[in-house]
Amino acid sequence: MKLAGTVSEYDYIIIGSGFGGSVAALRLSEKGYRVLVLEKGKWFRNQDFPKTNWNLRRWLWLPSLKLFGFFRITFHRHITILSGVGVGGGSLVYANTLPVPTKKFFQSETWAHLADWEKELAEYYPIASRMLGTTPNPHLKDGDKALHKLAEQLGRSHDFKPTEVAVFFGKANETVADPYFNGKGPERCGCNFCGGCMVGCRYNAKNTLDKNYLYFAQKKGVTIQAESEVYDVRPLNQTDGSTGYQVSWKSSTRYLKQRGVFTCRSIIFAGGVLGTIPLLLRLKKTSLPGLSDRVGWNVRTNSESLIGVVSFDKKINFSEGVAIGSILQWDDYSHIEPVRYPSGSGFWRLLTSPQVHGRTILIRIVRIIKDFIFHPVENFKAYFVHDWARKTQILLFMRTLDSTLRFTKGLLGMKSSVTKGKSPTAFIPEAKDLAEKFARLVNGKPTVLLSETLLGSPTTAHILGGAVMGQNAEEGVIDKDHHVFGYVNMMICDGSSISANPGVNPSLTITALAERVMDKIPPKS
Image (cartoon, rainbow, N blue to C red; front, top):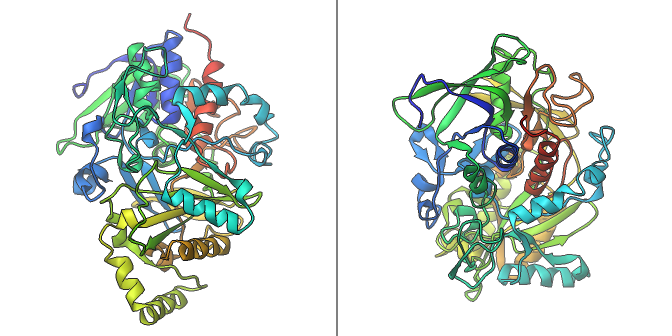
């Protein structure tokens, strides 16, 4: 870590090391630029990941309690957000799935007037997929088989398929030379299907960004400085940033905050919605007043519902497999996926309640009490099941129907408000119906997060937008090539720039968009 007060000059400083920031780091270094990546989270080696999510010190990111893991839970009025923190960003904690969205995403009215996006991204999705090591899941496990059986019962077996995932499926637990980049990448180990993808892969099988983009970026001379939170970005000399920027950072993990300053010619914000948007909202009131007034607008999710089905069948093992091994396309707008945690990772059981719907919180509380009264044995077994993760299949229901939020600066963080469509809801009838049918198949009981039952707000792992594209500063924060309106040599390359609802995991799309805009930057002369 640099000493406080030191000043260094870079061609590019990238704030954040997730899918967008990692692509930018590698591609810019390949073009001869001197690049620095500043990441708020920590470096994680395979052995640094916890065996289960009960190890809060290694799993949870909660600096106020001195917990510096890689998984963050953020509560807002209208949404609860799950995200990753660390070198590699969301790749450390996501479920590895890398689908290409349907035509509805590319043709969405929110950005279709800016470009023919299906055509624009056609050559970059394959590049992103190759770099991330995408391959079909070769083995369907108990949860996948149950979903397939449900699809058959509903006459939708043709809509069921294995997922495309970023995992190395060699021989289980066998380490081999780099299988992706002609032997030039790091050694890898075959997946053992332990289900631990989302608590950090301890076996070197998951294709996280530190094993591809960031690995080669460092080989090209990129400096990655972890545990460094950027708190100020201000133009040098000219107010539009045409002569460069001064970037101030502080330690994100130390009791005595270490601080430092760097200067750069160009800057890229790549901290995701929860990193980029609060920083831009703060800077707009201080050192970057020329930012668009649309900062924080058009925040969206994949309209998700997360339901945990606890099975009472002693033979079932939902932990075995990759995090998400299959997908059932339910209709033109929605699909459902079985999500798993490794055996022993039962932290979520503390936050669950029976699945109930209702218009008001009072109605829902009454229905929870009623469920406990009429089904005491089921509830007791669900809450005190020996191995919650092994016996619980989380069902992730997602759809492309759109509604948007606005994030603004509040006293204790960002505040949310609804700007378009209905408020995001945790109560999706189709999801509830499918979960109940799945539960009958596996002799189980559906449960949901208590925050959803009490507050009515859904939980999402796919928060997007807030710095979306537009024709001008009145319509968006960035143009179609990710350049920030009002400033020179400033870009945004992360999930906050996604300008429509993909309805699927957005990681591959963020990567493809970043590949596209980096391809447009000329080599350093």
